[in-house]
Length: 135
Image (cartoon, rainbow, N blue to C red; front, side, top):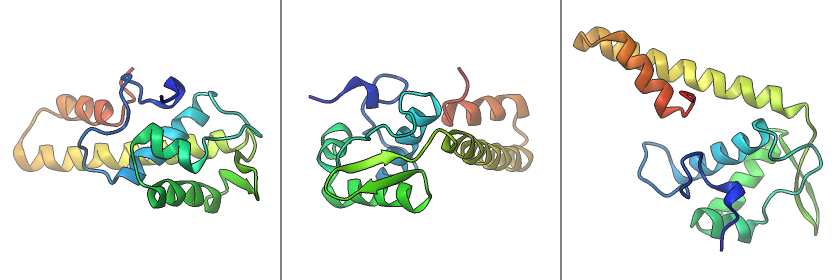
C-alpha cells in the first residue's frame, strides 16, 4: 500500500502518460513535497523500495531520482540508513527551479500561440495547469 503523502496533487499515483520521463515526474513530486513542507530538513525520504512501490517504477529509476536529488544538494545519503532532506534552505532553491520550469513552459506556449494565432490567456492557463500551479 502506498503512502498518500507521496501521490500527485490530484490524488493519483504518478503513472499517467505525460511528455516527461518517469524519473522526472517522480523527482518533481518529491520536490513538491519538500516545497509544500510535507518534508523538512533532516526528514527521511522514502527508501528506494518505497519509491518503487509508491510510483510503480523500477529500482534503477528510483535510485536515479534519489541520486540526482543528492547531486543537486537537495538530499544527503546516510550510508546504511537512507536518504534525508538536507535542510530547510533547499525549499527556496526548489521554488526557483520550479518557477524557471514554469517560465520555460509559458514561453513555449507563447511561441506556439504566436505561430498558430491562439489566445494567449488560454495558452498561459494551459501552461499553468500543466505545471500544476493553477491552484
